[in-house]
Length: 118
Image (cartoon, rainbow, N blue to C red; front, side, top):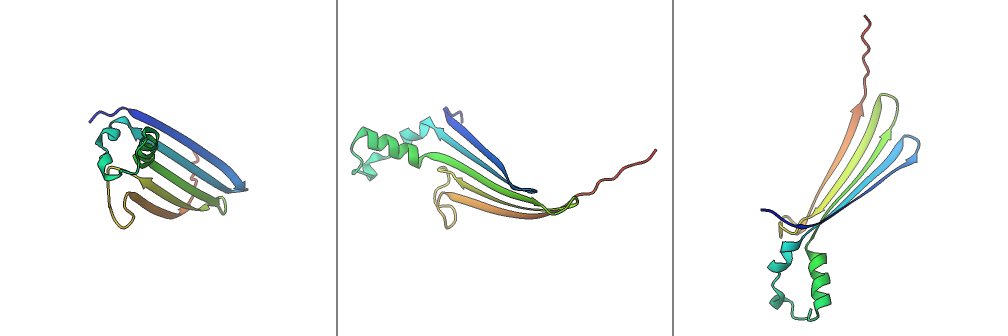
């Protein structure tokens, strides 16, 4: 399946406090072929071309949002948390959130540096 569409990616990275940073990524993708698959007879209240166009763009744009925080406790220990949310229009009514898919991740990282003497 070959698709022609638009794709935007936005990054945000910021050190909020020393050793505490925030990273966010937002990706938007829109497949131009999805507009042809819309059945407008189901929604007769959208009668103008502008309303149909904006509704089609809003409801058929795939969204990927990732938010991550990292906190370095010491030179050998750090904690992190990540939330990833996806709105994918190809998977209707998946789970209890419909198009939305989401996962969280929490982690504890250990750093160890080994130096070899020759």
